[in-house]
Image (cartoon, rainbow, N blue to C red; front, side):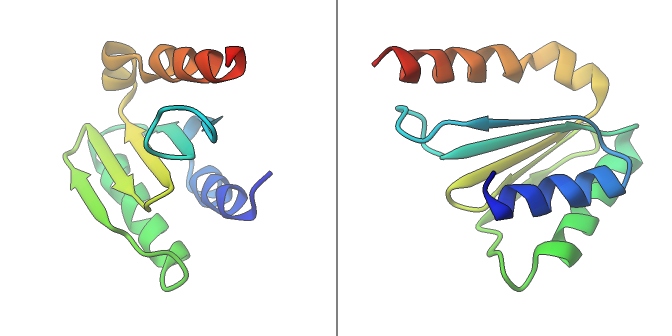
Length: 109
């Protein structure tokens, strides 16, 4: 696995993120090579996980854009997107299904 993805997953795991999934989308028509999804325990935990990632990944990683609310944080590292969602938002938006479809289309080509 990509060492950058391993570090991101490790930081999330050490700080109690749940259901961490990584989607490798290299070669697909998606704009990022990897997407990391993780569930938080609630709104405060979502923001805390963002802070842990900032401390753990900087200065090696450049955070190009961060969109944050209590329910969902999206972090753009260029070739890697990280989404941290509360369980309710993760269920509601079902990003896994979308990303699995993108990966499946890539594998058919």
